[in-house]
Length: 589
Image: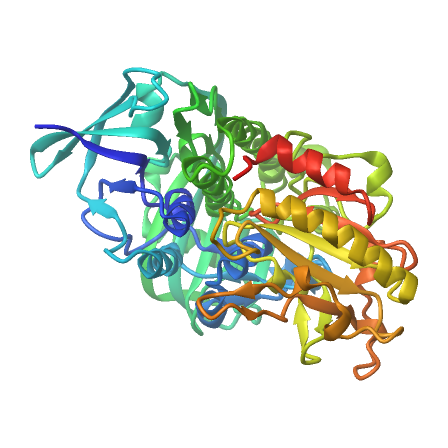
């Protein structure tokens, strides 16, 4: 029997595997998603969805159900031992996320539902189901040959006791901390475990504790505990420190007994417990993330850590989000294979930063560490504030590569933008109808690159300069566009004007920003915006030019990757720099 052949085999349908699969389905790539479970995840251990992940869901067009169903984490409360030692008392309450970091909130929703939202999107993108094969046990993965035109990776599968073989051009191992793919590649997990044991329990509490529906950190003489409210009105999760215990010793009763002691003088009982577990904190990262650029690791297969900072599911999802569009570009002939070098460069760096952060973060929750280092409740609050950008998922900055050109001179054109970081959003006014929208909506994760032109002076001279630059970049965009497809199918052009002065209107804006699209080839007018502060009919104090650090009299051009990270900043008129950048990472069509 001839083996099945696919372009990409994804092992594991967790957050990493599903986010990569959304990209592959969007590009029309032939893939197979192999999952050892008999069906979709029903109960997930992860639940924290950081601001950056919500932004990603928004860019994928799937944020509405997430925001509608999730618990929104708006504040965090800090409780500690009262001065009279008679139990705990409230010390401070602060915003969970620093205002202005993101236009999206930090939310809580169980992983099974998050996976379900992604699976629904995959089904929408495909005509014949989601491409997930349940009940498939991956027995082995091996690279048999390196012929670029063939399918060099061999996967041996077992389903219902029947073995079969699949050949693939690429394999993504998203099969968790005990990854078969990683073991077959003979990669090691480097790092260690601490002696700190923590319990986690999901329950419906019967309590008079006033902050039970607020994210809360409690430090008491009886131990440390974190409250994470869950979706709905009553369900909560407790993370409970258990010094001197091993994971095998932990029972539901022992967790509840410790919780009662920590919450004193407040009452705490469980009306119903849904799930509990225990874990020993460990931080490890894979020795390698790829073998021959044919087999890649993502998610828990290449990094493991403690769950208290809510990073695991998010970082894993972003691994898949990173590699998925790159494989989509390569397999559809849009980019060279060298694009895959950047997956290892970017996500290995991210994983190492995660491990370093988690080592510091876990110590903050350790009673022994705080006592030994004199860390007061006030110091703990300060550390939470300092870590806010990281825990929101907004601190990632990718290093220079063919996808990220960090030129110091050009960066001064937009001082509020960091090349290699995600493009922040800000409110703007859509010129065609005067609607106030977030700029993020104009740069979706749909497989296209984005050129954002900030036209700083829209008088006669400014319009002439804009038209000259547009002629040049329109020619560049055409070179990377598949003949016969819409003119904006490869590169999406967005115009942001500083004001409506100088008779700026839809009629005198270059057609490049008003492409003909779809079967009827009707012009799309929705990618032209005006700075909200200078829009005459909607007075506001918000200015995207100020937010991005762009001088109105100068302007700037920002190139944004398909995953909404900033690739480059250049001046309005430097079309040669734009050409050089795209020639380095895309293939002319």
